[in-house]
Image 1 (cartoon, one colour):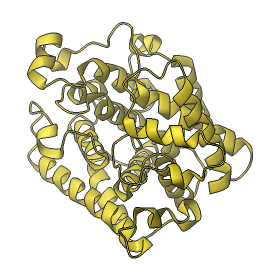
Image 2 (cartoon, rainbow, N blue to C red; image 1 turned 135 degrees about the vertical axis):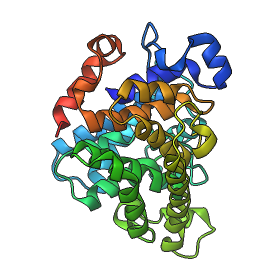
Image 3 (spheres, one colour; image 1 turned 180 degrees about the vertical axis):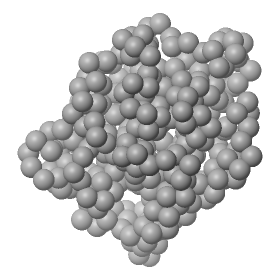
Amino acid sequence: MGLALGDALGFPTEFHDVPSILAKTGPWREMRLPRPALITDDTQMTLALARGIRTATERGPIGPLRLTRPVREEFVDWYHSPENDRAPGNTCLRACRLLDEPQRDWREASQTGSKGCGANMRVAPVGLVPGWTQEERAGAAQLQSALTHGHPTALAASDLTAYAVHLLARGTEPTGLVGLLRSYALDHRTRYHERWLGDLWMRTGSDATPESFVARGWDECLTALNHLATALREPSPETDPCLTTGDGWIAEEALATALQCFLLFPEAPLTALRRAACTKGDSDSIACLTGAFAGAHLGAGAWPADWQSRIEHRDELLGFGSLWDA
């Protein structure tokens, strides 16, 4: 729910700079949910992933083959949907067009040169599903990314995003979150999930080993987390977070800037969403990730009933929340 609300709040502000947003909305701390509260491709693809995960888990223990088929089918259905008119990302469109060819190996469709935020904006359901091992959660997060965004930084950022949601949903205090994410990144820096990714690392043609392939992604994410830690040492809530952790069009920046918005206001979820939506970067993706973190931390009661009642796809969102609520 938080992810969708952030998405809807940031939809009208995407592609605008902060002065333009303020001229349209007034003070950012008073931003209102648009009427109608429409979501973008961010929430559409989150729901597609959630449906695919639900189908896979209904069939038995999770694994790469069991997960790939239903998620691939859901992504292709999204690609053909008449509602796919919410400024979808080019990487997702290109990959899904190729995934629509049934005989094509999914690794041939993966856009290994793209680390856009289109993979980690949708990964939150992976962090919510109960009962998975750390290997299953990491593998699922990276696999769902690789179906469209096969760049190692996209894989690492998706893994970190799912892990952050997982930690927050299980009671981790926000004050320790960045340190835990940095430790996780260091621990996994050279771990390639071959069972889930197969020979994806070879498709780039630029890496000598799978370990060097994944290390590139984790190193970029660690740099982004370091920028985040620096920004949080001297927090400046009235300053556009994009100025310190990036505009969010690429995966590691979307993660870091969304985390900054959440961690500036960990107990004030609407303020966090509004800060995320009033940014010069990829506002809807930053805000949807901020909402995912805030919702995982505070639970379903974090969001005003009036906002929840108006969000597009409300019933399906609440259904998945009930299915996986820890």
